[in-house]
Image (tube, rainbow, N blue to C red; front, side, top):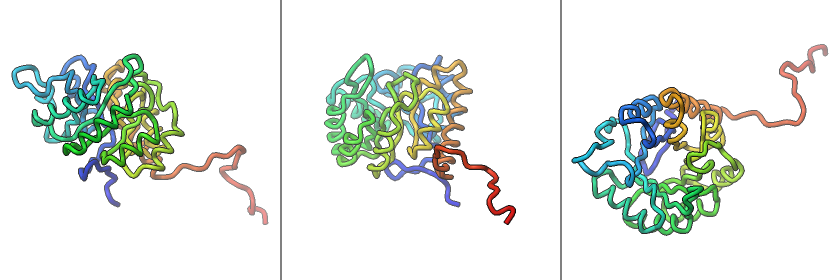
Length: 258
C-alpha cells in the first residue's frame, strides 16, 4: 500500500500537521512542541521572529532543519506591498521561496484583506515564489488564487487564535469540491477534534499555532493534534456511513427465520 502523503509544489510530506512558532515560553519549548507534533513544515512570522540575523537569538538555530521545512509567513502585513517586501526579505535571507501569504484587513478580527491577498499573490507567483495564501472560507477567492498559480489555498476555520473550530464546513466543502489545489485549513482550531473534523472533510492538512502554544500542556496538546490529524485522515479514507433519520439495527433479523 502506497504511503499516504501530500504534496506542495512537487515536495511530498508525511505529516499533514503544520505548526507555528509563536507564543511559546522559549525556544526550547518551541522545539519540544514541534517534535511532539511530528510536523515537517513549520511556519515562522518573518516580521516577528528573528530568522534573518546571525547576530541575535535565532529561532532556526533551535530547529532540526534536516527534518523541517521552514514556511516563512507575512503575518503583521496589512498591505500587498508590505507582504511582497516581507516575502522577498525572507528569500534574500536564504529561507527559501516557499511563503505563507497573509495580508490582514482588520486588526480586531484578523480577517484577511482578500483583494490585497490576490494582488500580492499574483506578484509573488510571477516572482518565482511558491505561494500559500491565507483567506476567508470564500470559494470564489480560492478559485481566483488557483488561477494565479498558487500552490495551495489556506481558508480559515475561524478567526486566528479564537479556538472556535470550523464555523462553516459547508463553504469548506464547496472549496474542496471546486479546487484542484491542496486545501489546508488555517486558523481558529482549538483542539484535536477540530483538526480531525477538517481532515474528515477531505482537507490535505491543517495549520495551527495558538491551540498548541496556548494550551496548559503545549507538548501534550501537540501530540493530541498529531493524533487528531491521523484519526481524521484515516476516517476520511475509510469512508463514513451515511446519515439517516431513523435507526438501522446493527444485527438485522431479516432472513433469520425463513
